[in-house]
Amino acid sequence: MGVALVSLLDEGVAAVRRGALDEAFALFERDCRASRHRPSYYWWFLADHVLGCEERVEATLHALDRLLASTREPSERREASWKQGKLLERLGRTVEAERAFARAAAPATERPRERQAAAEEPPPADGEADDRARTWHHRGAALLAGGHPQEALACFERSLADNSGEWGSVDVMRVAELDRARALAALGRHEEALTMLGRIAAVDEHEPLSSARDCRLALVYHAQAASEAALGRPATETLRRFVATAGGVARRFPGMLASEIAAARRQLDQA
Image (tube, rainbow, N blue to C red):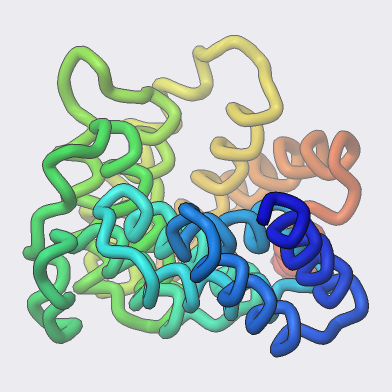
């Protein structure tokens, strides 16, 4: 029996590596029926160890779909939905990413509601505060990228609320604050956005130098300049700060913020 099970598992892995996913799934399901493993074992194995590379993103999404269909465990469903959301976000499929993050944030016993009410759903009570805060933040980012700033704003505010207290993460808090300001700007609430961005900049400008601090500060300056321009105010000085800070980031991480830097330089040349 043991030899047969190993053979089925090995055959399934070999089929995956050949790209024969349907054959692999059939082999894994046969192995599952003959063994004590739960079905989710195989889909985690696929998603994490076999398919989890750049050229296999679609196949990884399919494996995670199979996992979600095969398990009712809240922690497994939350993690699988989170992984799906991140992959879909990377592919630019923002609407699908938002739905995946909604599943990660919704109670496992309930189906996520429609988008209008989704931001009011509480995340799972059994997760750590940092995980919940990150889930709400990524869900908000997907909504903002998909053109839904009001719903995104609610998610960022929930992220900040879940990230408060003794065990809160400073990095998660600051990124959520920045994105909350960006959501306010997208709603035309530029004065509020500038007030919030000013507070973030005042803190970050006095923080020790680091790549994370410089990248966040560059994004703050970029958002400030956009809101200043929207209000008809001079943004030249803010754009200069952005170019100087973002240029340092781009030297350490070639290509990062390249299009934003090029656009800011064009604006400065025209000023």
